[in-house]
Image 1 (tube, rainbow, N blue to C red):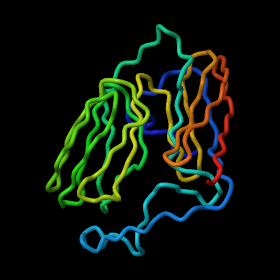
Image 2 (cartoon, rainbow, N blue to C red):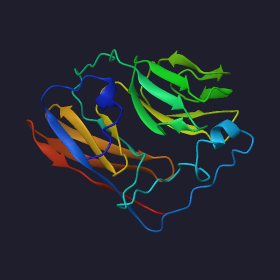
Image 3 (tube, rainbow, N blue to C red):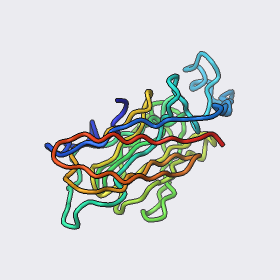
Image 4 (cartoon, rainbow, N blue to C red):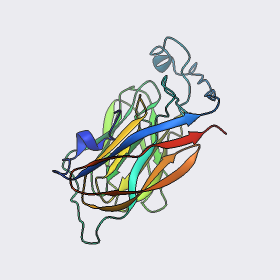
Length: 228
């Protein structure tokens, strides 16, 4: 089914409940991502057999689209509350690129930012609902930050390496996922109700769907993005 968001590894999945699952389809000509010139960073360049590219549009071999953030935009009961998970979400800088490129986190949950390259990196968060930060990591190390308000999405970038970008979705609930290497997503543990589900992509914008679930059923909901 693909990646079910960092939710699958960094928070306790809700017990029981319904599931919304689907695929992010892509139509049209696959665009070419710009190649990255890492000549000035030989330590990073040595990690690649072929010139690396940016990850603005990642179309999988099966014609689906990766790095789409899918989440419950509205519909949860007004009384629903979810505590911040104890587990952290990790953003790694490896090979002078961010891993993962798109990720999700809950309000109050720790974001661990790792520098696995051992060279100078800088992490700049440019949120509008959360306090911006700008962290310098001159060597192998880990920094931790948290977010206080829901925000989709918070752009992350490195001032040292202009091609390094990542996107972080901050939510007050655990119902989100990120499409992975086969374009799938899965949002589990939903209470009965009618939800607005939004799919976000950094180049192609957003799409929404209304999905009603009951009991422990699984509802299929695909999204299709077209080349521009």
